[in-house]
Length: 304
Image (cartoon, rainbow, N blue to C red; front, side, top):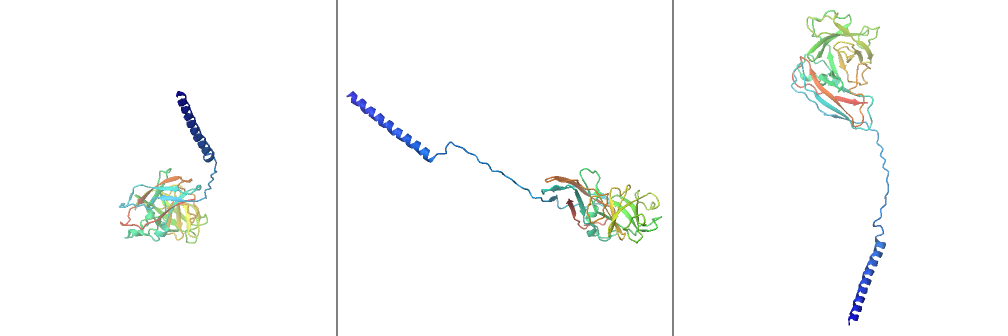
């Protein structure tokens, strides 16, 4: 009796073992057939190449500058202009500035009862991060026939006026050339440009003393350019109009429409992609300017 029981138990264990073995083998076959990659790894590589096109692009911010309620004989508050190279090529020749003074101030505003006779850009001064001194961008000075008491004028003098540097004024004189124009400053011509070195006063308008003379630089059919080695116009270029009635002084303008002039400077020598330069802007308003809104001007920043 006991033997039979033992045999039955043994037979059941063998059946169970056989059943489990069948399941295990079936799963092994399934894994081999349907999941052959489990536990395995492989890699592949992709080479990435990018070519950047050559693009010249600048961002100038802000795009609007305003100074309000500036009393004559005073300056405004410094404002910063940020120039960013947003392109993909370096500007290695330099960055310069110009303003449309000629287009906006086409006739003399002196003595005008309207502030709009003056171009706003005529008052604009800029300085870069390395130069502590601000300079006018494109300031025009006009022949002033209202001035009196000028003595010892040059034989060929045809125009005179004041360089109005905010709180200070300096008397200047231009003599025409042999063709009755203000274009040819060569040694064989009579053209000359000089300015007093002391601040103007009605009792000190003798043009035979206390003056410095400019050196002729170059000319076109419309302008002649001059530089001073000392005096109130030192470090500027001055471009005199052919009719002798006005001149423009400038430092940061490399505009090639003007005759060449060694006195000009770049605001910055180079500007690499993503590079930035910071320019300080202000206005110097001379005495005797009519109250009101002057004519708006456009400042152009150029990188080459």
